[in-house]
Amino acid sequence: ETWGFALEEIEGSVQYEYGAKFAELVKEKTDGEVEVKLYTYGQLGGLTDIYDQVQSGAVQFAFGSGFLGGTVPESQLFSLNFVLTDNEKTNAEILNAPEFRKNEDLVASFRERDLQPLAIVPEGWQVWSANKEVRSPEDFDGMAIRTMDNRLLRETYSAYGADPTTMEYGELFSGMQLGQLDGNIQPVFAHQEMDFYKVQDYLIFANQAEFIATFMANSPWYDGLSQERKDVIEEAVTELVPYIHDVQTRLNTERLDIITENSDIELVYLTPEQREVFRERSLPVRDVFSEMVGERGTRLMNALLEQVEKADVDKSA
Ligand code: 6CS
Image (cartoon, rainbow, N blue to C red; front, side, top):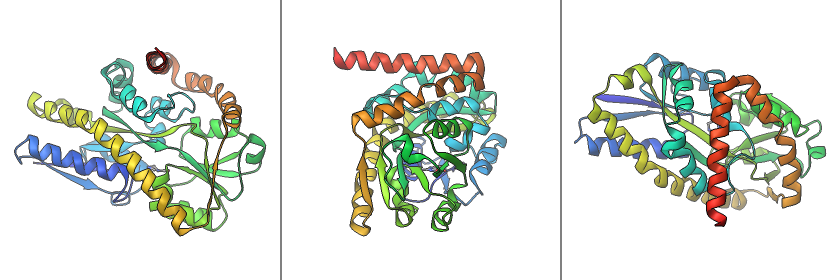
């Protein structure tokens, strides 16, 4: 038996490491009866092609991140800025605790589109790249910054003072090289492995949001699995929470070293005061989210905010 798993990223990425470990765990837990076959970004077409294929059952599993907003509007929750805590480990735990991961509004919003959400995977802080230093919304003025294809991100970057532009992942390098884009938003590992840093002058760390992908299955296929197979998947995704957190932090750290060793790109870290200006600008975008997804999605956002608040309280207790 073979299960297909479509990735939005290339070999060596966080999603690839996740897929490779998932395959290993599934093989082990099924005594070699199930093999997971990974399809890297590009092998099955573009980003939305991947989602079509998991929705139709042509592949059993896929990752869905920013571009998934067109398919599951509620997934844009993971594109909201300044919603999670400042601690990446805590965020991974909150998102994968049963209280959130199995939240009925979350599950229903995916299942309505023939998808079963299995895990929420933070891949590291989203870092801005640009050809000028950006520390304030004024610096973003007139900047064509590429966002993934969802309205929430476009609204966010408009609120930050930039001109958001959408482009497919695989076209970004030439988009920046040819000057169609002035900036880009990616976790550090992706700035490195896709060579984006070679055509940009600054990397700007605002810690406004993490890159978050949902690991999901085709739901009609998932529903037809035996309880034993479902348990295998459940055990694997649970083991993967701390595993992938360690992998993503290691990859992002190592890749930043590669970037600085191989380029004279400048690193800019926003001060708490500079960061606060963006945080304030991001708050009204929560209303845009509510307006887009209605009552169910709003309940889901509030459930997440509640878990975050609880984690912050526990930490300071
Ligand atoms: O920016 C993008 O489109 C892509 N970036 C990453 C790091 N993963 C997948 C996503 O589609």
